[in-house]
Image (tube, rainbow, N blue to C red; front, side):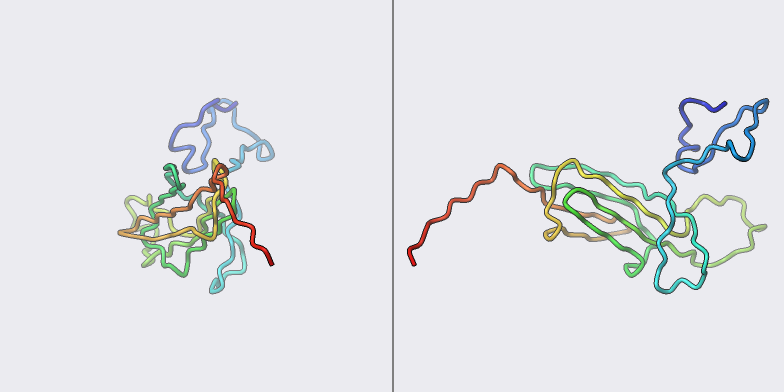
Length: 160
C-alpha cells in the first residue's frame, strides 16, 4: 500500500505517498511517529494544542564535548527552552509569523512557523551543569562537556 522508503519531502512534511488505485480508509491512514504535541507557552491565548514541527539539527563530538547546532532564525530567546540530562537534550521553541498575509495571496509557502520540538539521545553521558548555549546569526550552538569515565583523581588523606 505504501512505499517502503519515503521521499525527502514526505519525511520532512509528514505526508505520505498513496498509490491511486489503493486509497486507504480513514482508519488505515499512516500517521508518522515523529510528530508530537506542542508544549503550551505562558502567553498562548489559544486553548487548543497545536502539532509541533521537528527542529533540524547537526550533532557531532570532539574529544571533550558534544556539539549540537540548529538554525533558529526568527526565534526569540524567551520562546526557546533547552533541557539537558546526562543522556538527552530537548530543544523546544516557537517561531512566530511576523505578519499575517491572506492565504490567497501566497505564491509559495515553505517556511515553518509555530511550535517545534526536538529530543536528541546523546551517544554518551554529559555534564549538564557545564553546558553552554549561544546564538549567532540565527545559528544556535550547544556545547556540552562529556563525562570522562577514565579520569582519575588522587586525594591525600588528612589526619584529624
